[in-house]
Amino acid sequence: MGVTRDGRVAAVTNVAEAGDQGKHAVGVQSRGQVVRDVLCPMPGSPAVVRPCVDELKKRLGGDFEDAGGFNLVYGHEGRRIVVCSNRSDAAMDLSWGGTPGHTWAVSNGRLGARAWDKVVLAERAVDVALADSVRATEPEPELVERMLRVLSLDTLPRDQGFGTGVEGLIAQLQKSIFIPVLKMWFSADPPGSFHAELCGLDSRDVEETPSTAFSGKYGTTKQTVLLFHRSGRVKFIERTLFDGDDRPLDVANGRTDQIFEFQLREH
Picture 1 (cartoon, rainbow, N blue to C red):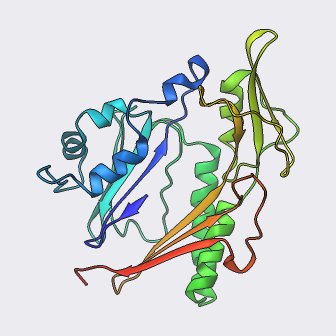
Picture 2: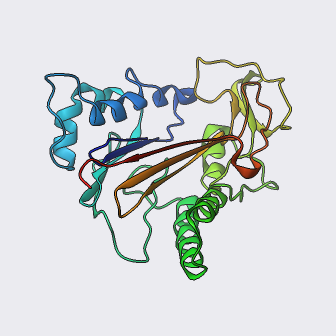
Picture 3: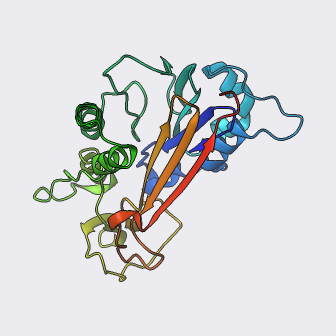
């Protein structure tokens, strides 16, 4: 996710791709580079003039197709937002303010496919949180905490296991906004079989194997809230949930938050 001082904003989510032990999820180009290329073009490169799919594909060139599967959200503060993907021809074109009282969510699913349970939950939860915040005339810090609580909603089924194979895990992950720490691995009995289970927060018994996208530890590690004020002030809050050794951090009172604020140039 990124924001420029002239009001352009971009963010990507990966697209869940389970085939061949997750190897299709890893591309030649980094998904993070897509955000950088859109917002900060190299000298002499064309900038994205207007948020439309054709313009984005033209600007990104090979990066658009060569990255692992992603959904890209791009737009300009106060103008328009487009959502597109390199794994689907579907796209969304929205006004910045949208429809009053309505929220759109983007997940790790393919655009145009049936919305995941976590997407429906997120849209409803954000609508309720905003309405409650307005009703209570809350100051900004309380609004931020409400949004972070939405990102912490854990509805992952505990009594159904994680199905068979990577596809079964992805089906379960679609049901919860927050993902608790899981350990994942492939075994040779039978060959190539996939396993996943919840692990303790202090567990360090999972050997990282970066050759695939579905091995080692997995879960929600950071949460981000991005606010645009009518005055042109932008506030970016990122909360870190675990340290470098996978130990949970004390997030009370925003102790682990990174906060960046700046004023848009055009305001």
